[in-house]
Length: 289
Ligand SMILES: C[S@@+](CC[C@H](N)C(=O)[O-])C[C@H]1O[C@@H](n2cnc3c(N)ncnc32)[C@H](O)[C@@H]1O
Image (cartoon, rainbow, N blue to C red; front, side, top):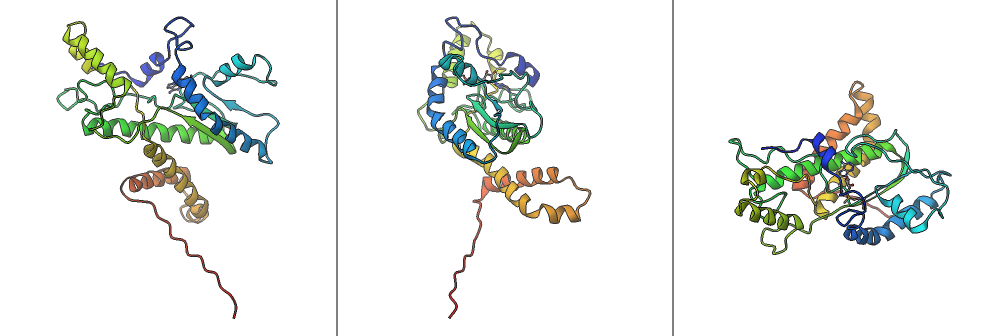
């Protein structure tokens, strides 16, 4: 099985270049529509950042694609601006600590850092036969393998960006998602249809079956619940860290608190997968007789 390594993915996962008929720049109307839909959220987030007293005189923003479009729409008519392209994967560190005021990622976070390693059985047989990514007909093990990579990647992305953002910085993310998954649903993703087209070519002897069996995309479109799940885990861990860190640090003097709270966040994630998170608050109002 010739599964792509994460290094190879960095080399080959890019959109069609140039401005020809099959170029990304001329064929990204879906992403454009998504950007317009996300625009109010983006604007609200930037306005909130503006209203904050600690608003900086220089705003550092990292976007993928957005700035180029801004220039296309407004020409050079928007204020002084320094634009930098940063080489490297967003599943690694890109900026110094406490550096970014606003982070926006548009239509990219459904791409995984790697194809799950567990898409073959112990005997080497393809487990996701007939599909090229997570699909309705994929067995549970394949779903779990993709979901695990999604959780790991998304957690890592948030951790790294939070390190790079200033306290109070804002982040807006858009990505391709899935509605609730049911195997009985009649709808198909485009990648399921692409898998069918490739399979037709196998049947016509134009592609080797083993080649198709060995091809899986580093792609997973999470459900809103799955995204919330990863974000919630982080929020709960941060809330508890704000309360308990001084006590814990005082007693466990040699323990690394970042490490402890990452592990704690994982425990929360595992727990929230099975149970509902609950917090009981008692409020008492009294009047002196
Ligand atoms: C569908 S395009 C979106 C481009 C642009 N943001 C837009 O909205 O038109 C997805 C982009 O994500 C980039 N990408 C995917 N995985 C990445 C990673 N790990 N690190 C950095 N960029 C990545 C791809 O190279 C591609 O340019």
